[in-house]
Picture 1 (cartoon, rainbow, N blue to C red):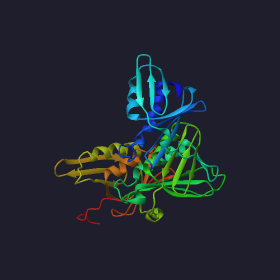
Picture 2 (picture 1 turned 120 degrees about the vertical axis):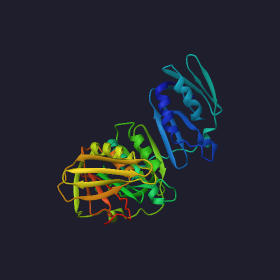
Picture 3 (picture 1 turned 60 degrees about the horizontal axis):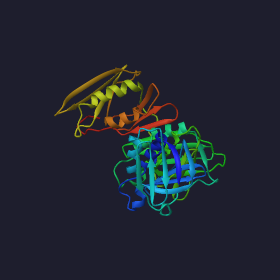
Picture 4 (picture 1 turned 120 degrees about the horizontal axis):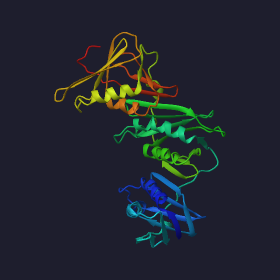
Length: 370
């Protein structure tokens, strides 16, 4: 293998595929990155046996084909610190030598034959999604997955595609639920209904951010596959049955109000500054034209923030874990969101546009009258 590469492009590719590598991988070879110089291109691959990623590196001139397996945590820092615009790589399955104008680094390699291949898509059952749409959908849902282990289906993200091309992505953790629906290209009228690991769907979003080309998605019995003109990835599916999320979405709510997104986020962050792990709640007091946010903690003090809102109904109060509301507001781009709920004990629906819906359970204090 012998090639010349743009240092920054090569470093960026190593960083990207290196994000898949974890120190907990049992097989040592998979703590490394596979380099393949073939067909005039350089490809980098990495996997933790749950998520796999293969990228084509831009701005590379290959003069001799070959392959090697090298540790990303060794070659990455060298590329980061090198001042030259270009570097050369040459070597085989025993070692790779990286050269710059003032340096030479010989990095021991492993046999690439022991490194499994990242599977590619076949031609059947493929759905195409606009890259900006896919990133939009994942950003507004993946944060709501369950963090604690053992939640099985709730540790993943649900992806549903119907024959008409409607695509829906859903995430939930038992206290909140986020769902967004968009359109995809589905000429083969295939159906997709699977649960994908959070770190896998996030890699799909990152891959989508590398190109303006559509992302092609396919689901096998055990994996989600995604690719574009930059690379492709695979991710193990999560076993289990995702809850019927539509049943938890409240209908015909009594109280409906529209609130300014950024103003509410700013006010909530300030009110939340005087909460603790033991008093992790901010009260929302709605009255005609006004929303008052309050919080209190015996050890920290009290907070009150007022903001004008579009609401003309009766006075009503409800409390939330502020992080659950902040997480959602930080992903929303529209100037306002709509909140709907029945009473202080019932879930609240928050809508942004026609495609995004977020449901969050309130904090209920038993000493507060209904």
